[in-house]
Image (cartoon, rainbow, N blue to C red; front, side):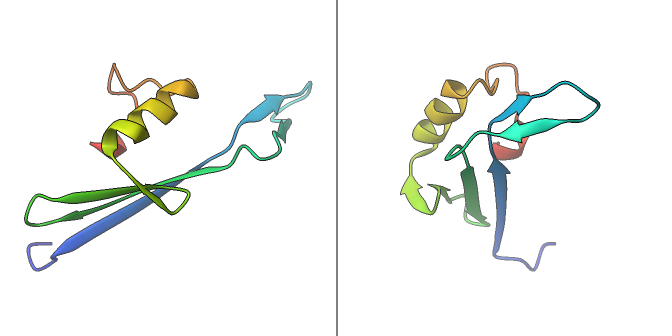
Length: 79
């Protein structure tokens, strides 16, 4: 949309433990993580982790620490 000045996205993560059975899992307590990004048409962006302002480098570090592969562009939504 050329008339838009900003766009935002938010991705919710939580760790799970797979359990026996079809599509059965259990959420790991206190493992929720919300990554958000707001970008402007002026080529600036702001990132947050659980509503706390952070740098993109910190987003990368936290996600990689949780096993999310950013090296091979498997998580392109943050690009």
